[in-house]
Image 1 (cartoon, rainbow, N blue to C red):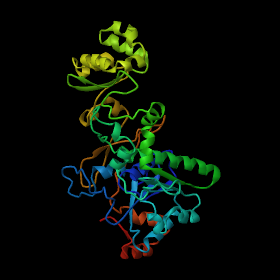
Image 2 (image 1 turned 90 degrees about the vertical axis):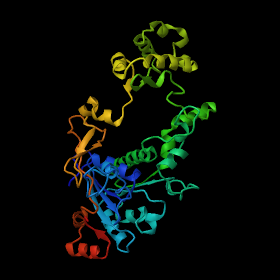
Image 3 (image 1 turned 30 degrees about the vertical axis):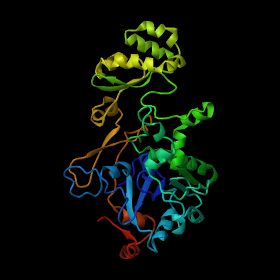
Image 4 (image 1 turned 180 degrees about the horizontal axis):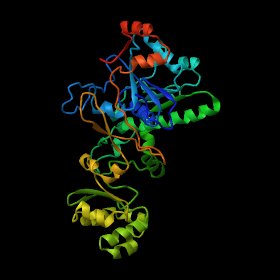
Length: 410
């Protein structure tokens, strides 16, 4: 399997990451054409057996979770706990452009494959670390050794504290934004370092803390407190600074609309509601006026939307004010926009005769081909090929396999 052609074709990424944050970062790079070599321990990435599994999949090489974020990658098994394992990583890193890992601080250093050691042999290497609380190289944290998962980063970064029914308890977001947000920041920082390397000839250590990334994404709660001393709490489906802006009931579900802050959208909404005089009423003329009467305004809009179906609201509001139905997975599969944009891609799955569908990258280029998607690798599927590409001969590979350092597909 080769990576799809893209702007990053020619870059090689050594991916030692697990779970979601690191693999999502390297997924972005693979989708853009980089050759991503996913290194797993003999038992595989922890998410390989997390499912969900499709009916009829007796092989169960991996589930949908692993497939989605490890597409377009090559897979090899290297056991870095074995004495010879770190040497394999060092050898692979001498020709890699980028290395991505998300272990806790000190793990890679204890194995002799930390940034400084690898950069001695390959000064052009860009080494990207995603950790719960950052790396001491860029700022030691009192909690830097704590383990972290998505829910922890969401909680500590402030995202849970503003999510959920107004006045109610904190609620986590559906997607794993505590992992995905740092992954996207890490991909951005990595590509910035690639650009810099073109000028300087040297790589960099790139560090993103999961906690930090969520704080950066929750920037509104920071300035609300700094400017006005407001400690934001769960907001429900309204917005503290914009009105009307949120989720409203329909006869057959819900819709979202944002007739603010652009006041002309408020006027158009009032006309669609059959209340043109409301759009001219000075009490509601500006966004701040409407925010001051938010409960009243939201109530007026909600009473009108609740009398109509989503299709009727689409006819009345679509293309006039920022508006959209609240979709669920089944409606996404029938959405003409997603079909036109090739956002749901079919991919082969080992053990199944039929393809499965995963979300594609949203990045598009003018005059570019539709994004190609290759299935995620079997455990160790490309071990021999990758090692041969690094200069190992068949006898050396067999010796490593006999010692339990590397493995091919089961």
